[in-house]
Image (cartoon, rainbow, N blue to C red; front, side, top):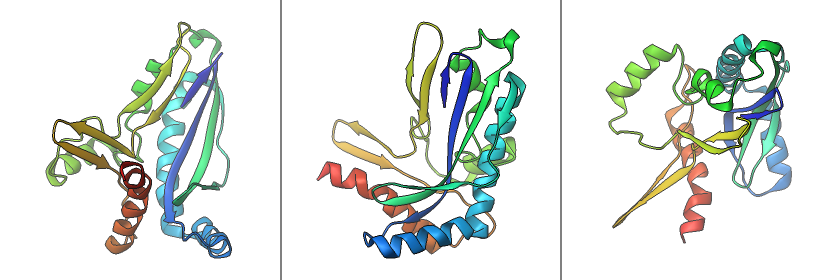
Length: 193
């Protein structure tokens, strides 16, 4: 999320497919990602949670009707830029106020949020610590840019832990979700080698 002079933008990434390294295959995969009902559903949950969180702060918002495919080194994501203009009376709102409303989004926690918290707490089996927490910068005006530490790592004395995850919806295939997570790990593993 970026806040700059009364304008807020949040790039929502949800719905992912691994890249193959073959440009023609990857273009075909990008097309299938853009048409995947499962990935579009996952993406819509995330977009709606961000738009709903920003709406009370904004005089107007723009939520595109369809996502675009963002190509990264190892994966492709469905992406939507949700934008808004802060209400004039809320111009003194800082990036932390928006963060409090936005975080965690459906992409990180699930929906509905309170029920998802309970399910995560029950089945995940680990404390997320800094994983999926906000990282970024803030200036003296309260403007700033924050991202979610979804692909991240933590180095302790004798241990390095790396983190990645994926969104689970009713149409999720566990084997496909594991492959997606492994593709997300690839950049971090490469950096550590």
